[in-house]
Image (cartoon, one colour):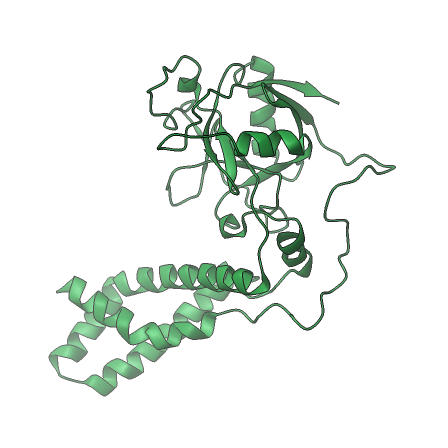
Length: 294
């Protein structure tokens, strides 16, 4: 009975959910970016610890963000320990990302399924709207835990692709819709709502159900805006970056971005383009070695 009520409530609210969509990013004229999208040499070097990642395809340099200290410090600790040396980029998807850091990949045979290894702890999420999944973003992998806590060791570097305004609009609206549905679902599962709707259904009060659903929708709107205050705002710099430089915008808000690639773009592209087998593991092992650099 409870499942039936939940399904009924979700169907009744479908039309109301449409109002949560964001406004379209402006398409008449592209706003001028406030910063250079593709990193170029500057007089002042951005702050942050840098890490050199050596592979058979060449060397990449990533800079860790000070805005994500838990992830920064954990990554530095593991690099100092030599943890990542000889590990693989075990999951590679062209036009998306390259992922590595599974400790079981160090001595894995060619038929092993990789990706489940860890260090026995997770890192609290440090998701920052200003740090997003542009091309070259260094981000923490994670499982489906509700707190969005990161793996203690696995990471990925975004290769990504470019997007049109329409595609970005669909991604943003879809993400916002999913967030609101999650809030609505939790409210519908509450004993208070279930009991109220059950009573109204027992009495055959369809109008009462409609009015009650309106009050539930108001509560959901308030909860949504409180939890995601900037959900319906469009950052023009980010839109331009995804359109001109590329990335993986569908991951924003779900994974912690804690650094970015500064050099070795050709290496990223070469690894991302390497042939893979089912499960996205490269046919030829792509191993890494890391060290801290200035």
